[in-house]
Image: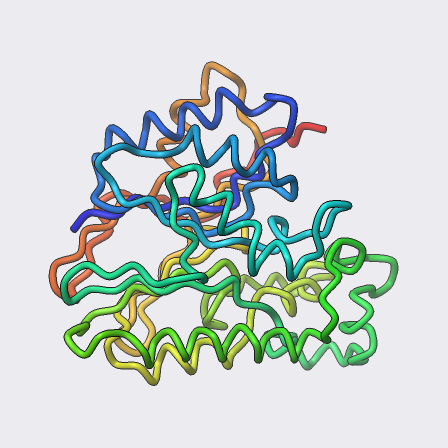
Length: 297
């Protein structure tokens, strides 16, 4: 099976990223995958999310989406929980996509499971000795993690992480008995090994919001899991962790000049071949593909 994967497209409204979205679709069509995965963060606007997914739908391919934190930013039309539990799934269905947190995708003995994931500050740098209250308030020395203003869970971060983990565990435990291989797709990072620390602030303060160790433990403990695909961190990485190949394939906020868009998108789309539980990255660019590129308004 061939998988194409990308995350963190961060589509701007009013058609500003129409060419980028079209270029991604063309690049994925060229890859000709069996499964196309987007691991979150298309847009906080449901209309832009729906339009983008419709434009990115690949024919003769299973299209799988997992919402990211930006996708569940609340709006006048819906709370974060309403978006995640109801509205995003409907938007996906209308566009020809599956929202994996709603239901796993099963193909013979292989299953794809999905979760937004969340952060419980277990990836924080304890040596920084930053008070826990700062993580809860998502602000330290004037640097603010934007979810503070845009997420309206009625729970704290630890409770949200536990909720996401319980649903993930439920999906894993209730797969058919003949499922022997599992690909996990999440927006947040499931493993600390994927977190990029830079020994400087506010970067390492924000690293606390990259994911949760407990999510990775659930995946490690299920020996059927052999591949994870994630986003959230805008630094692309692949690691081998306890028999699991872990991949992140984000784009980020940057935008290249128009004449370099095709080369940029070629870097952005990861291609993964799986045979039984063997994983080969046939096309994958590591690092931050936004380095040196402008960030539009």
